[in-house]
Amino acid sequence: MYKKIWMGLAATIILVAIVTTTLFVARANGANAKSSGGDGIGQPEYWTPAQNGMVANVLARGKGHPASAVPYWSSSFTYKGTTYPYTMIGTNPAAGSATTTIQPIIVPISFTFSNGVTLDGSKRVQPALASPIFQNAPFVSGNTQYGDAIQRAEFWNSVSTTSPDYHVLLGKSTVLPTVSINVPKQSGQETTGQASGAPLGLVDINYVYPKVRAMISLMPLSATALPIFLTYNTFFYQGSTANCCILGYHDAVASLTSNQLNTYMVAAYSDLGIFSQPIADIHALSHELSEWMNDPFINNKVPNWTVPSAAQYGCSNSLETGDPLVGVAFDVNGYHPQDEALLAWFARQAPSPSYQGRYTYLGTFTTFSPSC
Image (cartoon, rainbow, N blue to C red; front, side):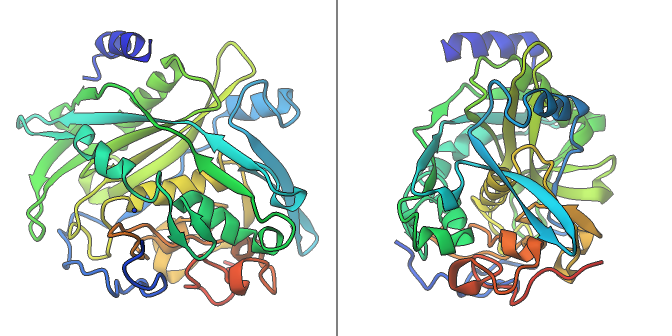
């Protein structure tokens, strides 16, 4: 049924994992994850769409629990007299052991540029599915998937005591037919990396974003699933290629006719050497997956924070776990997932209740977030 309906949609829209080394060796300088000086196409970053008013309305109508949405739980923390509510995927780790399994729906995107070159996300589906994003691998918080490992480490005080069997997992993946997008010359271009030699696609996010949202609204999927739009070596810019490069984002879409919320993510599977940081393969997937688990409806606000390594985000108040650590990679079975900031870093908790009192999975930050 998926294939039949999806092929019809595509025609209608015409769009167009054992760790081989110690887990804690890579930092922002790219130790043990060699890369070149990069192709000079721009600074790697990630995008956070503004929350759509309809999403807030659906959450309000459902008193925080829409009729149909991905499984999630809610809580809050207090800092300097202000209470900050948040929602995350799964169940509350403090409530005991429970396993939440989300069905991932992989949607490859193939971009064809005006010079005739095509960069096809479907060519990277199998290596992505073989990665620790979807397969178990050894992590300090258990032999499990990457996203689950981050969540277990984040709430280690609960997991290590009352909730040892707490998990948030991705289930068996469904791969939908590739969506083809013919990119107009004014909305993107293909080039060759000056250092990596890799084919690179640059596309205006203002062109792509509404197309993906339209697809989400029409896809015959349960709101409890997670659509993952996978691209290959294709990055987004805002208005001009001088404002590159966005490697992915996650978003929420409210139904026009029902009390339903769909979440999804877009991420680039990329070759090593394109950026000066050790960004490769599942780096963007790991970034967006953790952020989706920690802020599925992109409405979790925290005390203002900033770090020099993430100056591109300015002064932020979003609980976006990957943004402070773009390019900080570690090796898992030859893949390059990203380090993630944990709730304690954003909530400025001391000591941190996370694994070994850390503020990030790798321990990159030794204290909580600085204000701005």
